[in-house]
Amino acid sequence: MNVSRIALAGGVAASTVLLLAGPAAAHVSVQPQGEAAKGGYATINFKVPNERDDASTIKIEVNFPTEHPLSSVSPQAVPGWKIKVDKAKLDKPLDVHGKKITEAVSKVTWTSDGSEIAPGYFQQFPLSVGQLPEDTDQMVFKALQTYDNKEVVRWIEEPTADGEEPESPAPVLKLTAAAADAHGAAASDDKSAHATDDKSTEDTKASDATASADTSDSTARILGVVGIVVGVAGVAFGVLAGRRRTV
Image (cartoon, rainbow, N blue to C red; front, top):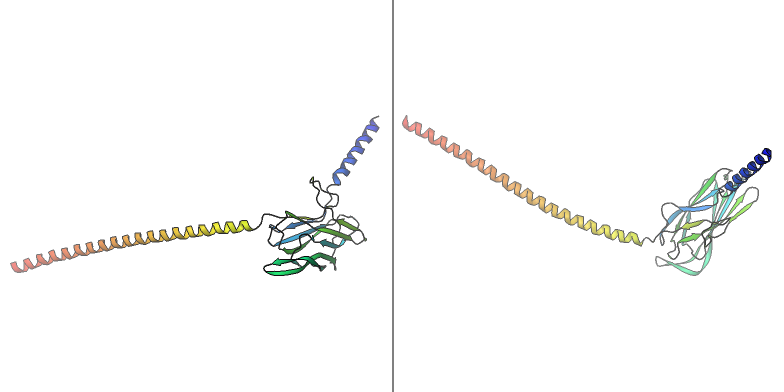
């Protein structure tokens, strides 16, 4: 009886360990360096962990959302990896700074070229992107991760409405408020700067007035001292003149 209880307890413990280990598995994700503001430009990093104990990651493909095309995508060189950027024609051209953009990046692929992501390691793949869309709060990038044993893991499931994470979630880039707030802050800073300049001007005028008063006061003191000296000299001259007459 005791043996059965011990076996049952051991089985429950083992099941608990497996249940806890399942959700802990990492997946391909994307994060900005700093903020990714709507309508602006940002540097983003795709973080690719190795989930296998007996294989290494040798290729990662990131597909860009066609509903939110980006006019500018520039990859940063990653030692030991070749980079390929694919573009596609746009159904509707983009107007960027008065220039018509007729194609946008559809996919970026990193392929091992002397390097790989070994078991227990991860690698980051940076991109400079923009202009970010202004009509959405997030961008979904579907990714494919290839291992050297030919296995391909498809990180392509979009976020669910109830917020529950799918089994193979696609990387999601969260967008922050548009940079228009920064313009408001700039205007506020400009007003503050003007207020500071006005105050500085007033302080300067006050300092000049104080300096003028100090100068006038100093001049008056000097003239007073000179007058006293002249007066003493005159008295002394008068005494000496009287003595000469007496002699």
